[in-house]
Length: 262
Ligand SMILES: O=C(O)CCC(=O)C(=O)O
Image (tube, rainbow, N blue to C red):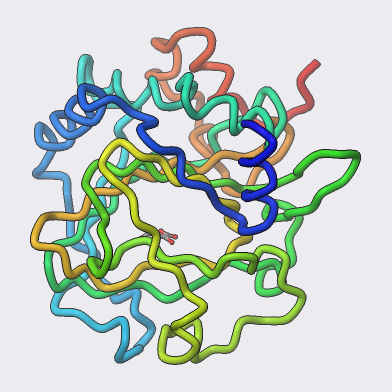
């Protein structure tokens, strides 16, 4: 993560890492999803919060559990835990020995699928697990998202949207803005190609614009935390899942419960 990228991430709360994945890596992820396509389910509830600007004709579809899929289907998803193109960013803003907090999960949207209200923001969730601050010459973030794009998200198509700089906001986001009904000029529709990765702090106010693309939207979300910290109960909630035993030492380290690493 170079100095320009650190400046831009600190300024805006997000960064697009271009060509983070090769076309082959994208294809392997898509093949795994296609192989498990019967598990891709439309949500049974709306995420649009009653907003007219976010309304659509269907709900988004989700699928998860990729890390536990049988080989070879789990492999490309496990590789993204410690990927050479994204790990340096996580090491820099979360500290080395970051951990997977929850996910991965795929968001799929067809043309006409509704959007989701803007959420996040330090004031709305004043909880240290989602903190963002700069101290001792470095960025500190809590829960941090890497969204790997498996399909293009072009201008006017909708999908991921953010309010740049909102991770530092000291006042709550107006309700009408969260519904995307007012102040749309301050909401940025993020444009990315398949293979790009968008990294953002969960403290950044973000959401989903209705999908207008002709093709199916496919965005794969991983949520990471500093190694000593947790937002969700994570995969260790009940017992240590068997599939973790089968991972490489580097992958297993990312799956560990929160603790101070020495
Ligand atoms: O649609 C997106 O990319 C953002 C999704 C999101 O904000 C969420 O799942 O919490």
